[in-house]
Length: 278
Image (cartoon, rainbow, N blue to C red):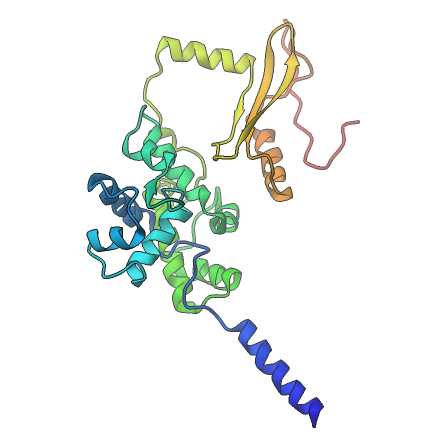
């Protein structure tokens, strides 16, 4: 008898564990365009440093716990546009968008916002350089399985993702998803001084990952005589998958040669991650 009761209890507990969620705070349920408008209102109405409850009332919501407001706040934090550590405040990334200091800042801020969402990483990796599926259900299925959501909640998240990458300018005319700053978002002309800076960077390669509050810089000297070095700015702790992504990214970013000498070096491909050079 006791064994049967234990089995029933275990079965009930198992059902609770696999129960799908109708909401999530791991992935945005509101798209980037709506979030940008929401954050802009906080900025223009001078609502920074206020509590979430006060911000909710002043932006037309009944309470901080109301679903529309709560989802906007969660999404804004996932995108890295709001910080609620001490009141509701715009982050540096948000200021880069609303108060840009150069031509690239706004476009780069939107790209960074997309990449800030950890839950988007598998989707970005899966479709980067490929055409997004024409049916939103395909992306929704991926999200449903990854985050254990109901079909309806997953479809909301999938819609938010599709609209967000469109808003960030990461979907090309043929529906291909790109994960780098679009060429058209860059300044059309480069000044002579900027050109000199690019030439200098080619001699002294600098790898820069958009820093977070806990980022630190690392330096690798390549040639002391010519002053060539690599500068890496990143969080002090990264995952194995992130390291692999960095290695793969380096493989296509650098032009690798046997040596830098007059007479024309011979280019050699960078070894794949995990391989050894003979």
